[in-house]
Length: 237
Ligand code: NAP
Image (cartoon, rainbow, N blue to C red; front, side, top):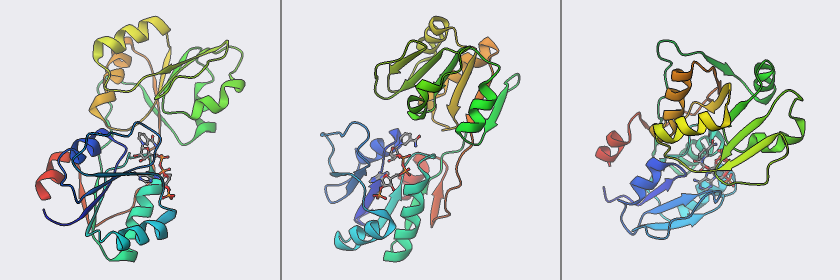
């Protein structure tokens, strides 16, 4: 496709697509993670200033197609993208990756928010958090009977009853098995991202018979075209 594209990223799929875009295309990142410097397209970093700011950027840059390949839990930017596309009159296409599905023998429990998660975690002793940085803001509230392991993109100093691991996926099955054995967790906490690169932890929880607490997926807006698989989106471009 020859339309001038603005790609909203922050996911593995977005980076893979950015590697195939032409020099006129713009790849946009929030700025929380690593910024690649080896892409064929332009790269910009940082917020736009809400839906109106994004709509202004689209008009100023002559963008003709907006692609939302942000994370399924990054609901704000997806809502901004849908609104900005409407305001500026360009189509918005989105990758809407399906969530993981529980298999035979899985004990998956959905929670709505942090308070619900804490209530569901009360009977456990060694939770393993793989749901992002939110637990880091609560390290001073760890219940007396618990030890936490928190895995997020960047490491930071833990506290006596919490280990913070900085690591980015993909994670292999063997790596996950070794980590679960080392930290001796009795429950896994995750978002339901649906990403293959972080799925092996669910397999390990299944093998060990561990419960999984999943934060419920946020509602995302309907846009002009929605794709369940990145390959289908590549082909449509
Ligand atoms: P969010 O709550 O939906 O967005 C917060 C604000 O960050 C947006 O309003 C926007 O600021 C800015 N923003 C987000 N994505 C952007 C992008 N691709 N380009 C430019 N600005 C962007 O998002 P979040 O949950 O904080 O996630 C931030 C980024 O990390 C997203 O790009 C997402 O794909 C990625 N990510 C998120 C998760 C997760 O679990 N949430 C996991 C992996 C990766 P303005 O309103 O100022 O435009």
